[in-house]
Amino acid sequence: MNFSKVNSQNKKFYIFRHAETYFSKFDISYGEQTESAEILPEGISAIKKMAEFLAKIKTDANFSSPYRRCRQTVEIVKEISKKEFLFDDRLRDWYKGKEEVEIMISRIKDFFEELKSKNFKTIAICTHGYPINTLIALATKGDVKTSDLQDYPKPGILVEIVDRKVKYLDFDK
Image (cartoon, rainbow, N blue to C red; front, side, top):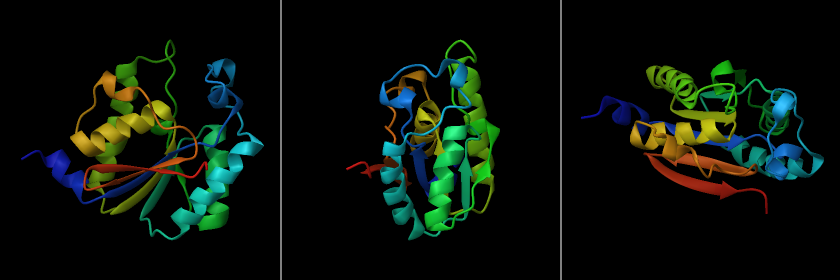
């Protein structure tokens, strides 16, 4: 029996990407604004709807990437849901050329292993595309391949993982 699958099976994950940015809207590289890019006003509505949904869910722990767009997003979620978020550098975004993909996967695995060792039942996480898909693969299969990283959710989508089953909830409607 694979211990990592059993241990993550009794946890619920609510994982979401930061609100829309200029760069995510036009699918372009963040470049020098990797850490400082801000969310767009038109992305706030979806995050508010998501926050209202999350307000009804009791979470044991809430985490976020420290990048500005995630900080801005969780501020909106906090205002509505009253959930406090801890910022964890391991949830930062991945950029080709600045970090090997294996290093990004390794730091997300480290974060995930730490979550599994805690008594948390329900966890909310705000992060970026590649880290989201890494977390999905770890929570559903117990491992991740680089092929798992493609087609990550757009801003406004909440990924719900319960008993290793993934459900996508779209709040950008």
